Image (cartoon, rainbow, N blue to C red; front, top):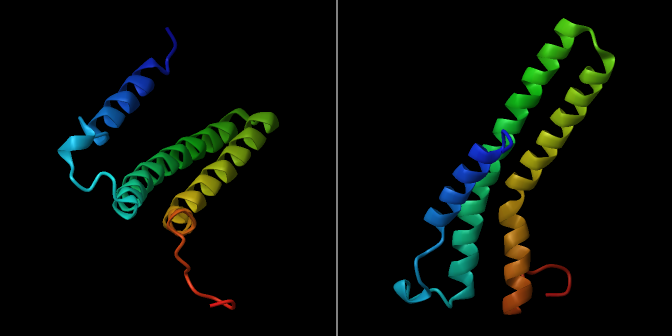
Length: 115
């Protein structure tokens, strides 16, 4: 048993709450726009929460590295902070990415030079 078991159990329970019990429970389950709208909302909230958590954890690592004066720990904490900020950027761009995929699937165009 690792110390991540509680985290995985919590994420599994959250996933089971987000997934509907059956496809027939929602009459709009086949509508692709509705699917991507819900997916965007749910994943954005989850990604923002995870990015915030890992940013806070990396900040704690950075503060702890100052107390130990260990350069390797400090560099690891800085790279973790950059990774958390990258995750935050992806979470903020989730709506745009989902819109691009939705437009590609449905054949719609968002406009632009060719339109």
